[in-house]
Image 1 (cartoon, rainbow, N blue to C red):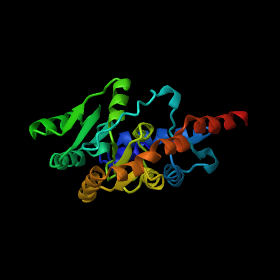
Image 2: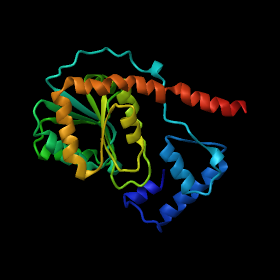
Image 3: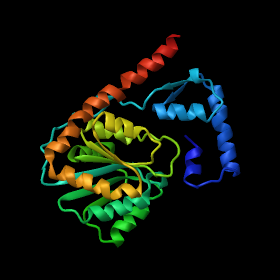
Image 4: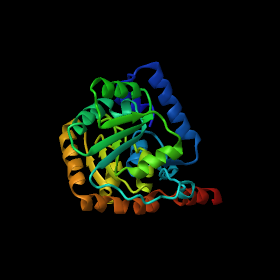
Length: 263
């Protein structure tokens, strides 16, 4: 929800022309459209509670994917002696690069655990330099890959990571979750307390959730626990694809939109 995200991260002030103009456009858009699809309940509640808007315009219409456009999974036999972590997507202030760098330092101290970062954004160079300057060996960072290559990396991984800046007051819902679920990954998140993506992770039993730097050591302990117990890992991964089809299949979006057209 823009421009509030920029305000949360202190990129702009509430009285700057940029913020005031962006907020004006946001309100104008809300008035001009017939329906607004929100990615989650927390997202819907935030829009309604912070705007003068007719609630009948709002509905939960989550980000969804068409699995027919995804490659057939190869069902690779994974090496349980090594745990492979992956992060794919934007690398900016919203993803909390300082916390990611501290996470990288802690992963470096663990045996048989590797971390691969694939993405781009304003903080890519910061993380790339951090890895190089600190002679990090267990974390590798790559700029944007072709989609097929990225999918291949996801299929080889065990755990997909989600990072959100703990300063957010808005309920972000990162779409990288869907790719992780399609490829049967467990999910480990470190986010603010306002996103309800954590509700999904917990309720679907696909992983564990942590909150900010104060929770970083607990996050590392959880990753060690997953590494040491393949059955524990599988207790999450067995639910990933099933929960993706149930909650984020493109048929959900199609049916919601189609009903509006028929009216």
